[in-house]
Image (tube, rainbow, N blue to C red):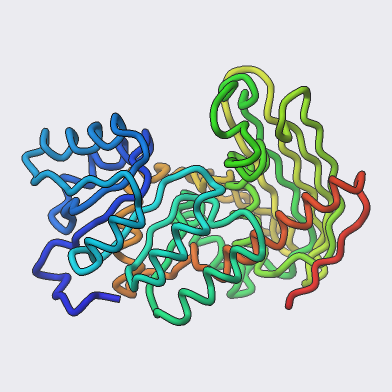
Length: 342
């Protein structure tokens, strides 16, 4: 939705909900984009609001309006905004994203989209009613290697999908000790839902199928949230999948996802930073792509219809169905959970 403005000749007026470190990091590059103007921001912490304002002023940009409550920002600045970026703790995404959609503003939403299927369905209803563009900011979903893998798989180049093996690890438990990411009331989950969300989303995107049944185990390793998760699943297209997330280990972070097809084997990481393809007996050279430092450019391309929306609300619903099933199964000590789409 373009609010009647000519987005090719005028700056898009950006509102920010959640002015934390990720928003400040992105602002360093976004404030220099000729297409973007920071118009307003909202955050419950005064220091975070000021940090983002300082980024704008340091770049010679106008000072955006500042609010403690995002609802006040939307109410007072609705006619002064074109797009909104939401970067808050996971459990707040659904309420804030739905409010933005109901205000008729296009939305760039930090991952994961929401924490439950019910939240996804409410957001989809708001999006359908208003017609706005909503994109979830997964690096993997915006990676050219993931896009190309999806295109080639859908074209049948790799043959039938047989199985998926995915793993992701990070020294997450110690890295985020005391952080909001380990507070279940606002995080929506632990390592699997935070860093592991990148793996789940890339699998959901490239599998080209919803999940049918899931069995999962979790181990909190003394924390309030899951640190290690193991998933065994069947997709509706018949493919089988195993996903492993280890949220403690030596310093670092990495991911490996292997897609086994009848004609090919594709290995890729959760963020779309590298890819290896073997078709028949021929192994293609390893490819690498820079993990996106400025995903706003991709959001604008999607908004203008120049790029497929791999972070759509429908893909977010597929992800949410998988996550809800993982939680339900883990709570029942690995009992198989059947996913029935409503």
